[in-house]
Length: 303
Image (cartoon, rainbow, N blue to C red; front, side, top):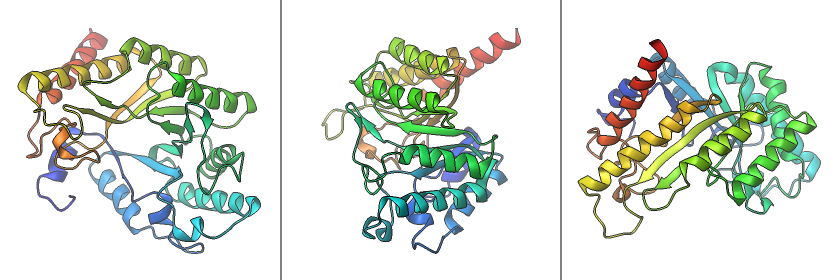
């Protein structure tokens, strides 16, 4: 998609922040135990910086996108701690504060608490603390360290487990600066925005930032024969605008990022039409809706 002539001009004209979906993850960047492959992640940073865009570092530790040597190495807990620390030290030392923030650990809980996350958990019970501590050691006090997860936007069992995780980290003195809320939503199923605001507030009470990290809103359900009608496009636009407004109203919500921007390239399938630009790179109503919210905030702040 990077080679498509429309892709970069639209992205760079409309977005000030970019994330590599896969290029900077453990598997692609660390294909062998004693070898790192930096080229693709380097290119992401270089292209973004050349366009005056910030980069989100995504991600340092996850239960998927791991290399085969790590998954099948039969490492013990001590060896896994060493591998995790080495990996994080290498990546964060290389890029550091060139990233707006780092998703240090990704998607580690479900509604019952910490979930099995091969190869890390349950073999390394404190792997989250190990990961965040290593990131702070490598990057120093200025790097922003985040925990990132999905289906934890409102006040529900899973967001309660995320809150339990990060509040526990705070009480133990583990370095963490914020929580990434992914916001993979649908017009037909999403949390009340009042609950989102309440969730952001309780993170603020822990002195944690919130970033909206992977926003998309399915206009029609996956696998449905429904069409994304003009009425549904307008409803999608309104929900995008309401999410941005909710972030702007929360002093600790510092960033909103969509997970892709064109319906031509989306992890959930183009037929759901979840992103602000259509498959032909034309802006949908969501674009103007979000711009209007931002302009209103700007005008209010400067008045």
